[in-house]
Amino acid sequence: MAGFEVVELASDKDGNVDLEALHEVAGPDLAGVMITLPSTLGLFDTNIVEVCRVVHEAGGLVYGDGANMNALLGRVKLGDLGFDVAHLNLHKTFSTPHGGGGPGAGPVCATSQLAPYLAAPIVTENGGSYELSTPEKSIGKLSSFHGNFGVLVRAYTYIRTLGGAGIKSISGNAVLNANYMMNALRGVYHLPYDRTCMHEAVFSADLQKERGASGLEIAKRLLDYGFHAPTMYFPVIVHEALMIEPTESETKETIDLFIQALIDIDREVTENTELVNNAPHTTPVARLDEAKAARQPDLRWQPNAAD
Image (cartoon, rainbow, N blue to C red; front, top):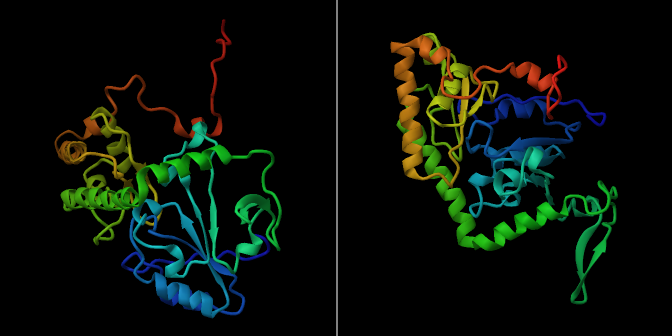
């Protein structure tokens, strides 16, 4: 990438960045480290301050993937932890459209050290008025005309509407909901990293697979209970992974129904495995060819070739 070699750092037994692995690559050739906090395992890396210190000591920079900021809003500043630059996924935390409902946007936040390199234009204040300016060492524009300005306004409106207390309640409720769900399902589904989670919890369906139903089958069966399937088989370091994020907006009643559905499906795996493995049974269509859908998407109606 950009002439650099990309090295993947391993996780330790607690799901944190392995400090020994980091020290092995922390030398004069280290340009930087990219970290998602909380991690894709839904865990806050308790080594994060030390990670940033080691990288900075080697002369590198720390880039933050802000994909999981929903767990940290109003609680901590990435800069205080040692991050030098980070992007925010507005669709994941700040209520903006996602995918086909876009356009997407990922604002970049940087320390004063890196601010001169930000893309242009940026808004600056000059004598009580505002103007567009180009940072001293900017790489220039990345998009033309209005770009995705509108979606930035939507995120800003969301923040102003909620206010400081509202923003803080988002992270508090998101973490509370995820831990409530995780503790209710502990012992039913395997927890590869059994510790307090943040906004999401990652389970393994290994216990169910031993009885004949994989994580995919469980996710399909959830559709019959009226719930959208969670993210499956990701992160890849967890076998039969089911990554579940209740978010801050779900009520306790809904979460209880979801928990009970997963408990019932676990019982079905033992009592009637085929019921689970042939799910869903109540949807208009059942098992689609997902690989073909990804490689050959059919995005519009077309007259039947046979007609």
